[in-house]
Structure formats: C-alpha cells, structure tokens
Image (cartoon, rainbow, N blue to C red; front, side, top):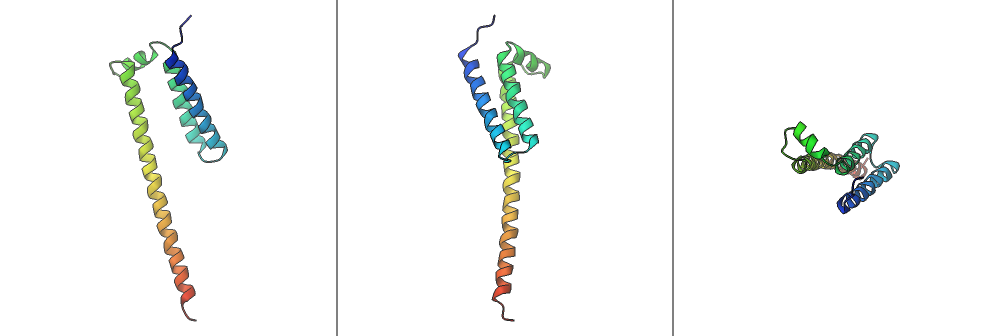
Length: 116
C-alpha cells in the first residue's frame, strides 16, 4: 500500500475546492459547458498525476521533457498564458462594447436635445 504524502492530501483538497468553484460558477451560468469541461479535465488530470507515483515522469519522457516536475511546470505556465490571453480578448471585447454603447447613448442624447 502506498503512503500518501501531506502534499498529495493538500493538493487534492485544493483541487476539489477549485473544481467546486468551477461547478458553482457553471450553475450560476458564469462559465460555459466548455469551460467547466476544461477545468474538470485540468483538476482531474493534476490529481491523477500527483497521486500515481512516477506518472508525471513517464508522461514527461513521452513528451521529451527530462522529469515530471519540469513537465508540470511547462503545463502550468502554458495554462496561465492561455488564461491571460483569454482575459485579454474578453477585456478588449468588453471595451469595444462599452465604446459602442457610449456612442449610442451620446447620439440618443443629442437627438433628444435638438429642437423639432
């Protein structure tokens, strides 16, 4: 029987907490099905890799990385960069929508102030 480390326990608890937050956001319709599936896969995959000894090293070797820790670091950085990219795109879209709304409101206000 495998000894479970304190790291595995803490990480697994954190992963389930983070996953529960994703489920809560999904139920509140704040994230899509696709986002929930993505976060479910990420957290389930991380818990699986952490809880099976040597699994991260094996996966790392398949992808040509020296060890599991480096592989997990590369994956984490990639996920963070992708998340920043998505936030950037959403912020630009929100800015564009706000600009259009302000233009429309300004034009409506201008029409109301004109004499007939």
